[in-house]
Amino acid sequence: MSTVRMIDIAVNFTDGMFKGIYNGKQYHVSDIPAVLNRAWKAGVDRIIVTGGSLEESKEALAIAETDGRLFCTVGVHPTRCKEFEESGDPENHFQALLSLAKEGIEKGKVVAVGECGLDYDRLHFCPSEIQKKYFEKQFELADAIKLPMFLHMRAAAEDFCEILELNKHRFRAGVAHSFTGSAEDRDRLLLFSNLFIGVNGCSLKSAENLEVVRGIPIDRIMIETDSPYCEIKSTHAGMGFVNSLWPSKKKEKYDQECIVKGRNEPCLVREVLEVVSGCHGLEDIDHLSEIFYHNTCRVFFPHDLDSAADALLASGHDTKRSN
Image (cartoon, rainbow, N blue to C red; front, side, top):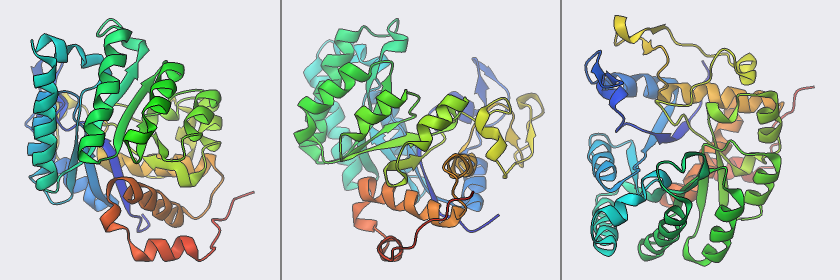
């Protein structure tokens, strides 16, 4: 395996699967340290742990504090935006998010507001009007603490882009993560010059998906796993480009030296890199990983931009396309 550097921008370490719990049943011990060990060995050198509610954001911050290479987001996922009103005091709930974000910034751990946005595939969890109201409210959070946004868009491109346009002065940059949209959706997002697109296994399922990803300029892509979800499966169109494999075992036969079959994890961001490289027809995967690393630092770690990566990009070295 070549020496690549990667940042996984989306890991759901607060999910029960990383505690060994699947569908409410305990199968194995909590194993985040073993998962992290595989990630570091694979070339991952930072991970952003996603928060999707106030309580989850608190847990994400606590997890991020356990390792210098872990960071996190603070925000409310569109499917959980009812929590603002169910709290009994939406403004107080917002202030609690703001307070938590400020605490995390002081600790050097919170790097984005989110996960927030719109999800019209799952309106049974939260109606669109409530989603829109509190998506817009979270731009107020980004503006107050001057952090980028970690965004979610599912089957809602028109409303999402309209709200983004209305609030583009309130955030400096962001990523539309776990992108699964159409070529038209992609092109709408790319009109926002400060917006990047996050790609994971769910972005790479079909031949059509691969064609859409091929149309994203490499200087606008970030890579992610969104683990424990969105793994690249053997039936996916992108699987043909995957070169890196890890031994796996079913959860019933748990072995900490193996990945759990059916549970995605951060080391597998290497496979996402390989598929994006393949569908773009690019040979130099090390150079491509540096570009994605640089893209991610520009948004989430601006004080840590690697001068070598800047020099690499400025050198005019073109990544070779394969024939």
